[in-house]
Length: 289
Ligand code: GLY
Image (tube, rainbow, N blue to C red; front, side):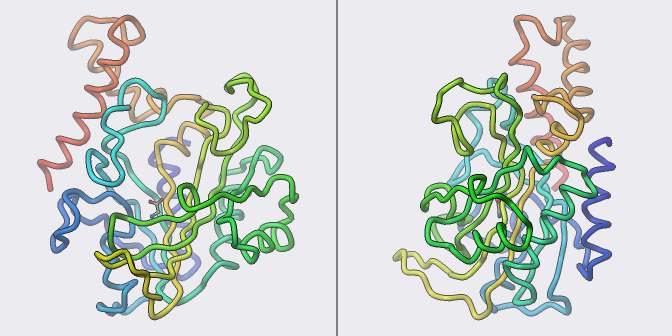
């Protein structure tokens, strides 16, 4: 599947299950002084989660343009040197505003990636927030994920928030094992390890709180769902690549940079071509917005 096919399949899947397909919002948030650039799919729904804004739908799905080049989620310094970092990327997400919660969010995600996208279950792992017995039980009893493939982590890995303030909550993440050959070889290598063996595919956030500027958590009016899956990452996995820059969309830009400069795309200027490919996307979409 091309990147476009993967995006369309995602939106069709959720559209067929009662979700309103909402256009990506601008990379420059219209009304949010806490954010310079849009950094997640949920940004445009922030006030819906907190109950300040009402929409005529309670389920939505988007492919959201994101830039992570500063603030809480900042990947700028890694771009070009790692296989998976970008300043600009697209985030596929489904959202529930007080509609479905953990059970359905997990069922949708597992169904889409194992059936529609056809990822083998025996290469998938999940993580949950350390005290979230409910999510662990849903993964095990409802989806049949073996207990030894369910890991529990603390706030750093399994509690998501868009910034210092705003909607937030415990999350569960789905990982794929890319094989021992991609790993660090350590006996303790597991999902969450910094090496390239276990790749995080999808983050499902159980939105339950709003954090204020004093750091105090207030429960949201209705428990909600916010998910985020990087299109470039899932494209690499589905296209059998170990590097996002080898997927159809990004490779075309790397090759264009190589052609324009007369430099081997995979030679000594490999990282530079990647920086060019990435920063062109950021600057083009930022200027457009
Ligand atoms: N909002 C979920 C994520 O960005 O991972």
